[in-house]
Image (cartoon, rainbow, N blue to C red):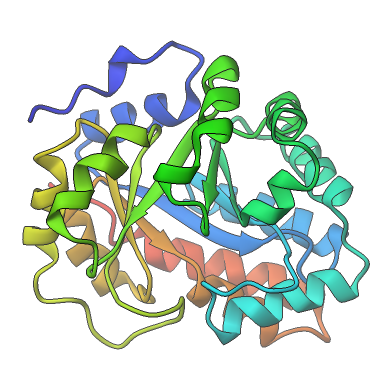
Amino acid sequence: MIHNFLIMENTDRIAKLFSSCKENGRAAFVGYVCACDPDFETSLRVCRNLLESGVDLLELGVPFSDPLADGLTNQLAAQRALESGCTQDDVFRLVEEIRKFSDAPIVFYTYYNLVFSQGVQNYVERAKEVGVDGLLTLDLPPEEADELLEASKELAMRNIFIVAPTTPKSRIPVITKAASGFIYYVSREGVTGERDDLAGDLVERVDAIREHTDLPVVVGFGISNANQVKEVAKASDGVVVGSALVNCISRNLADTDLTVKQIGEKATELAEGLSVK
């Protein structure tokens, strides 16, 4: 199928980003960090530096006490954020602060209990109001997402769904039909975390998804260096890096200035692999 990212409305920051990247012959850089890790002020500085260092789309983890899809690196990040006193209000406030200096797309990486507990409609309205563009609700399958999808459609909030190596081919159309914004292909089984190598069947897997959708396909889980970014960028519309960035925070908890500096340097290094020309 032919990509056509421009069909969506002009206010769609996600569609605009992928269209621009396609025109420029490169993949988008999706950077993940947990909101308020290790605290609100440092997190805001981290987000700003990431966006100034090559990150195109910011994926913000919403701290949760039981993040089952996350590996140890991101579990500890959520724990640090919660221990610093981070609340849902703080996560929304963080987005409001980011919107004062950036128009980059922002996606929440969250769990359904955090959405449901505040009332689905209310949560989506609030997220949209502060400037969130999409929700990746990890533990919510599309078959059970009607309430969220309906609320999101009313407000042009994008819903990102995951396709994994273990996803049966027959289920891919179900996922792509429910999705908007982009499809997130998890290139490895298991939880999040850095890896030394990439899946050998990446191109085939991404092509199999593209048979069912015109949405951009981004690839994540385990990508930790510029060479891996380069390889993934050849096969996909976007490259997601999380643990490799979060580790810059965990290594420098005693020196937040160093945290901000090193995470920016890491993002700059990773961004060098983005051209797919």
